[in-house]
Image (cartoon, rainbow, N blue to C red):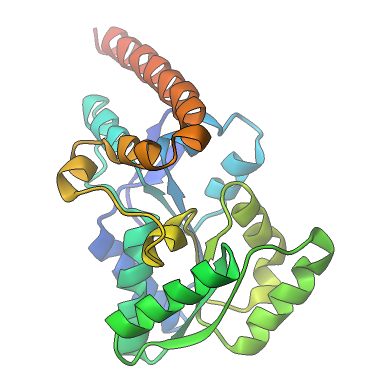
Length: 251
């Protein structure tokens, strides 16, 4: 399946809705395609310098998705519209439902034992009949990574959700993709913290207003204030610069 692509600040996004992602995923589970999905938020976008690993990772993705409302807004202002925001955490539940309906299984990798275990319990309770092939923490050394990948392959999982934070989760998927044996892989960052109940997700109105980052920052100010101050500033400067250049080109 091929979709229209939109270039936003040097990243080629697939102009897809979540429904279209599920259509592609259905094809993948049927054996007609496979690959990893990239959910790119503003923080990842500003870190995607030319020649960087993250840029290469997204270029090799089956689908590159806009996981940030400001990115969607910017795409419309630039005349390269992306239809909607597609987040990693939303894909965990929707792909798990698809896996259940197709008789396939999912694997959860990342976070601490207690958190990934509670995330697994949450999905099992919410999606009756879902097969969870396995769940394990993301605290393993580089020397253990191949063993972990082989364990996942032996589990027979069809979909894997990897919540180890960028770029570690992307590095793992890129290096061990052939070993994992899954049809679909999704890096989901801190989604297990929300699924487990450790963190709350922002209300829907904040998500739609592009303020989900602010809600996260309130919950973890020491860890996130500096990060968001830098990434949001860089994104804003680059967005304004691109918009000005776009207006000049049109003129």
